[in-house]
Amino acid sequence: MEKYLRKALGEEYGKKIWARVETAVPGMALQLPESKSWLKRKAIEQILPVIALYKALKEDGCEDAFEFIYRYMTEEVGGANNKKFCSMEKLPGFFSFYKAVYWYVLHHNDLCGYEFGAKDKEHFNFFVTRCLWLDVCTQFGVPELTVCWCHADTAGFKDMKTMEFRRSVTLAEDGKPCDYCFVRKL
Image 1: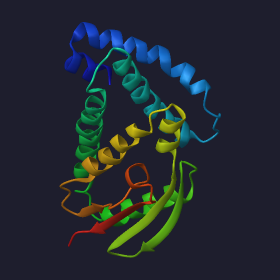
Image 2 (image 1 turned 180 degrees about the vertical axis):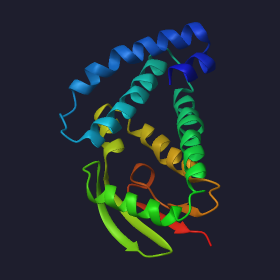
Image 3 (image 1 turned 30 degrees about the vertical axis):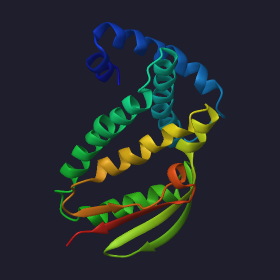
Image 4 (image 1 turned 90 degrees about the vertical axis):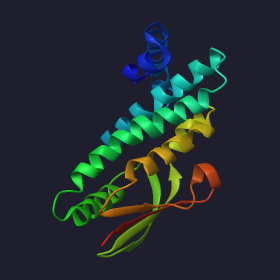
């Protein structure tokens, strides 16, 4: 994030705002319940700097703070994930492997509330009924930021050759459970 800020905002302002983000995050973390879950701690470590940056930009009078965060999340975060997924999908049996790992992680974490749908050779789906990202953003008074993570997911899975990601609703945008669906492309 620091590198992106220095590039997008200029070296001097980028460094200053990054220093403010780094200063804000530890205090924010103390406001959250402690978690023994490694995965949850890692997710929160990724959420809090984005919230701190958004708040710092708004404090500085940046009128397009939301658009700035949205671009960062979809282009930088989603783009980096897309490169990873597109290179991983070259592995033989990628869809089956991805499905197995994803399904295992869903069943063994407390990041969100899940309802499980179908799981077969061609697709798997689930519904997110409670979302850590929405909960944390709401706790810090910025629930509108949650959609940035939703769209970063979409950007992360776009243009894949072996798998399609579908989602028609999200808790953040529609108030209805997110409907994740991964479909094998034949």
